Structures are given as structure tokens and as C-alpha cells.
Image (cartoon, rainbow, N blue to C red):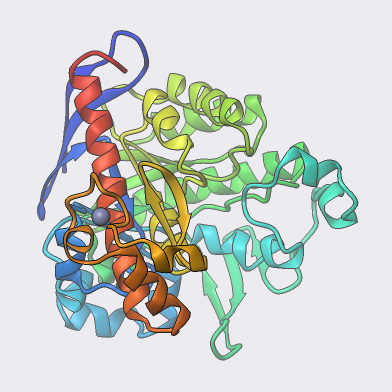
Amino acid sequence: MNFKISKKSNISNARLGFLETSHGVIETPCLVPVATQATVKTLTSQEVEETNSKILIANTFHLHLRPGEKIVAKAGGIHGFMNWKKPLMTDSGGFQVFSLGFGQDLNIGKIINQKQRMGSDADLRRQIMLGEQPKKIKIMQDGVYFRSPIDGRQLFIGPKESIKIQESLGADIIFAFDECTAPLANHQYTKNSLIKTHQWAEICLKVKKSKQALYGIVQGGRYKDLREESAKFIGALDFDGFGIGGEFGNDKKIISEMLRWVIAKLPEKKPRHLLGIGKLEDLENIIKAGVDTFDCTIPTHYARRGIAFTSEGKLNLKQAKFLKKREPLDTGCVCNVCLNYKKDYICHLLKAGEITALRLITFHNLFYFNGMVENIRERIKKGAI
Ligand SMILES: [Zn+2]
């Protein structure tokens, strides 16, 4: 893998670049749509390509459970399996340490807001203390014992296992195994978790045999000292790039601030990937902070709830008023959906429970998001960002 920075902004930390992989070059900053189960839900790989998506991220944990990496490897890796010819990433399974652990116990996502933290729900006001274990998984020194959400069987994933699975899956860019800490983890817990994440990062580098690019992951929760420590430690290791994981708070300022702490300590010349951005409004800020690629479930996840992103804001196409609108989702959009279908029809399909509606909105949303990022790239080129 090769990464070239072609322009740095004078007014922010934004930068333009080219990330070259064996499956092609992508221009950065770039959105990485999420293909958890080796599919962007509802679309074929050809359709995803038509939305101008350039790179996808699949999920190591889920593909390991089902169908298993052996079947994927036999098909030529994820590329062959899903017939996607462009670059691919796989995450390491570290996010599942959170989502199937404290995330599930406390029924929280990785972002909770201050109101929730201070509010009436006792679970959200408490802190996760040093030594605490989630109910359904066990986080050990050398890895994590999970229970399969499919059939309940026990499985173990540590740094070695994660790399081995990711080598079989064959993505262009893979990630080191880490513990993504919960937003409620206190300083002591987070510090202790960071020691493990750092040890695991070194093991991942040591055991990797493939030519895949390996990104280390910076954690550290919402704590400045830990974020900086992690960025320094991971940044000094021989990774091809860096993932920034874990909690980012809920407000724009906090996200930008955390990114500032971390990015200042990471090597300038290597690519940076933000793992999972939570909000559309964050997009420009994270690019201004110096992020090169970021994965995001918003366009696809919202689409399946009937919500389209447009230049007029978010539209909930389930609302009956759209039955009277004989116009495209976005009059300025030139995607196949906007050129061929109107709001009244899509609203009708949603109300009738027709899956085509979800396909149409997913297609438009991805096209729209990719267009937004392209627009930001243009503005960096012109020196406006
Ligand atoms: Zn469109």
C-alpha cells in the first residue's frame, strides 16, 4: 500500500491524498460504506459501485462466525466472494468486544450524550470500574472469550486469531485487534484496557505474514492523557496507517478536540481512518481535523428506516405527505434513483412494505454521501476548507 498526500490545507488540518492498494487507488478524504456481512445491505456490489463508492469495510467477527473465513478464502477472499473489485478493509473484531460486552449489558452505543450521562437512567450514570467484566464476554490478557450471537457457542479471539482470520478474508487493509472501550469506562479501566490494546498491537504486527496493509488502532476513551499516550505509542509502531477508535463524545467540539489530541501525535505521512462516525454533521469537522478515511453506517442504516438525506435535510419518506409529491428525492441529485423515481412512489413502496423502497433509498443515500465528500475534496482543492 502506498499513501501520497497531494495537498494540505492552510486553514485546517484537512488534506487531500491518494491511497493506493492492489485493488486500485482511492482519493482521500473518502467515505467507507459498511458491508458488515460482505454486502452493503440491500444492494449488489455492482450497484454499490454505481453509487461512486470506492472502498468498503467488512466485519471480521461476523464473517468468522458465518460463513467462516475458510469459505470466503476459497472464493478468493471477500473480493471474490462478493464480487467487489475495488479496495476493501476489514475491522479487527475489537468493536464487538464493546458491542457484545458492556454495550449490550448497558444497552448503549459507543456515543452517549451528556444528558443521558446525567439523566434518570442509573445504568448510564454509573461508571465501568477497573476489573469489571461484561456479562456475556470475558476480556482476558491474551484475548476475548465471546459467545456466538448465532448459536451460543464459545469462541476466542485475540490478536493472533484476528490477524489470521483477516489474512484469510484477504482485504487490502486490515486492523489490529483492540478493545473498544465503552463511553462509561472510567479512567482506571480505560488505562488498563489501553495497556492490553497496545500489547495486542505489537503482537498483531509480529504475527502478520501477508502483504495486507495493517493499521494500528488508537484508543483511550474520552481522556486526553490516554488518547495522547495511545497515539504516541501506536504511532511509533511500524503500522501502515492508523485507526482512531472508541468513544468520541456526542458533540462536535468534543470530536474535533479528541481528533486534535490524537492526530497531533500520529506520523504525518501515514493515512488515518476514523472508525465509525456517528452523525452526518460531523463529516466536515472530522475531515478538517485531518482524517483521511472514515466508515459510517448512517446512509445505509437510515435508508432502511425510510430516511433519505437530501439538500433539504433528512426526509422521512414514510410520512403520508410524500404520497402527494411527484418529484425526485433530491431535485439536484443525478443518481439513478432520482433520475427515475419520485417521492410518491417510494413512499407508497414503504407503506406497502416493499423491499424495493429500501434499495432505492440506500442507493440514493450512498450516492448523496459520496457526492458530499467529493464536494469537500473540491473545496479543499480550492483552499476553502
Ligand atoms: Zn439521488
